[in-house]
Image 1: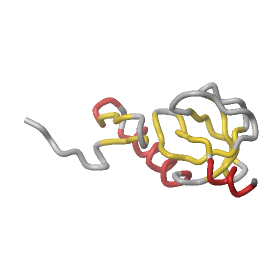
Image 2: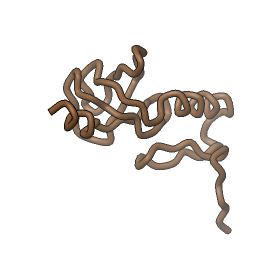
Image 3: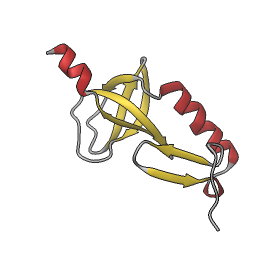
Length: 101
């Protein structure tokens, strides 16, 4: 029997998969949702090299971050695409790099 999950049942990253509510405490899910609401879609820069884990700066605040794969050098523009346990999920912000060219 399959079940339709609501957003309250799941915390997710754009393409990193799903975490079922039973895996995490309610307070941790709420913390991740608050973080998602604060940074989702925002742009920033790589504060450290991401290989694929590192730190990013968004609105003058530092966050632990993770790429899906690969690496980014310090100062590379990033965009937030999701939240995963303990990490802001980011991609390189190619649009901002094109705008600066």
